Length: 328
Image 1 (cartoon, one colour):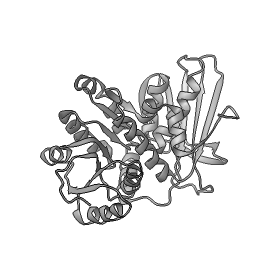
Image 2: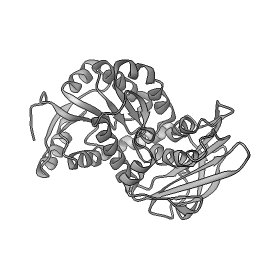
Image 3: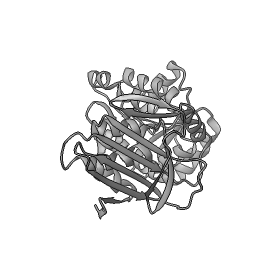
Image 4: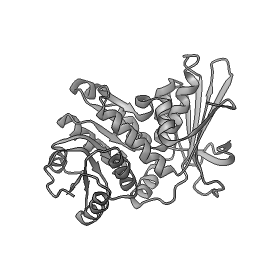
């Protein structure tokens, strides 16, 4: 462990000591990247740094307040990319992305809140103007469902009439930060696109049963990043993104994603993806995205799925994909 926090590093990992951060740190270190582990409390960061150093990783630690511009600017100094796991992203991603734009430092996050993903993508013009890549949704939900949408719309190249997506990420446990993010996101109710317009309804409206990943699942429209990712990947005017009903029992262990595209003539095409633990898939997607950014991603605001493409996402998490009943 390098105690000198001013030493340059490949990655500034915000929220490194959290459940998501620890898994991402291991994935990044496994790629030979040097890390600046950052968060609110020094003790857990130092504990993680010792574990990482025992595995041969090059690390430094520092505390940072993402709500303080000066603290963020200081933390960004000398890093090649910032990776944020700090939620709720609807409140906290904006200041970090703005600090990255000011410092001209690329940014990656694992947001899966509709408003957070949309707001980051709306920074596209600014990101292009300063020559920086901003990437959001580098987690299981947005990336997995978006890759399925991209596969389904590619053959015809036509804008579909409607798209539905669903994700069910089975995880061993949720950290406190993830729990708070989910609760805050769901408080906004159900959000969908109809005729290209945002429609807001109480959470639970439009609940249905979908069968994917080998099991029937009770799902409901949710205010998740998958919604915005699917809309921008397809251009469809009608888009719904389903989440697993939190009150429904879990009968399968694998994480799964599903997408359906309805063409203008009413014909449908569907795809599904099955992976393992959702948190580990998230960490692999985040690390793959970070490596791509470090290799030279084009400036602008991206989703992870659009940046990497379907093949890289599925390969990163070792997922099985089926398109219209045929293994892809």
